[in-house]
Figure 1 (spheres, rainbow, N blue to C red):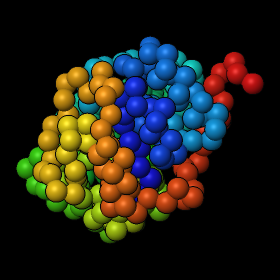
Figure 2 (figure 1 turned 45 degrees about the vertical axis):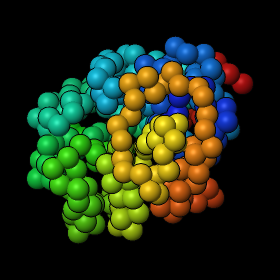
Figure 3 (figure 1 turned 60 degrees about the horizontal axis):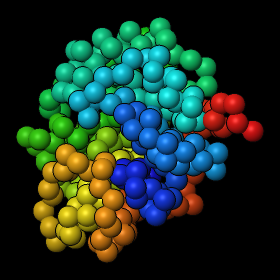
Figure 4 (figure 1 turned 60 degrees about the vertical axis):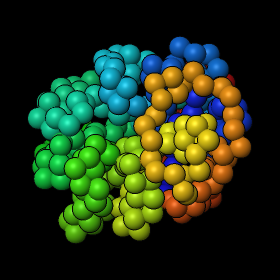
Length: 262
């Protein structure tokens, strides 16, 4: 499975090339070293997903998301959604369909508070032609809040329906059970997952093999002091995910380079 690791800008130079699959956060776009790093990764052929900011409690309109995606050379944009709200997410996905642009792929999140609501959103995305512009569905970690096996159940449902033959799937965020990624990988339905947990827990001095999950610190993106455990945690997590650097990346959009670059 592909893994997008999320770092503070100060650690990108040291660790940011550990994988070739990235989830980029729009609120950090204004930081030059952050922007420059991912522009370069796009030019080098990595796969760039632009998140919509919802997980950080932020909202960005389609104009700003498309602008940032063009500047970064992103290949895929996460469609605006509302955490845990299937109805509002569906409404936003329908509204966004009027603003899609040639050259980008689009990920829609199957939001909900539990397995059944997530599946309801998923079924609508898969069967309603209005969502024909969607090329990937994100399965949110929030549904694991009351059921640690929720995403595994959704993944098994995807496999039973054969949805993975027509759609790509990405697991948005790592749940509190960090080794969940191994079980998700074995279902064979997800192309990738993103997480910052191995990094911030390493910065706290925690080895993810032995330490229970802890919440990401509020100042995570401002951290710069490294510890010896960050690299070890990265290696551990990539092992759980059965990450293969040589594995094929998702199909690229038309924006292989940053607009205006040569």
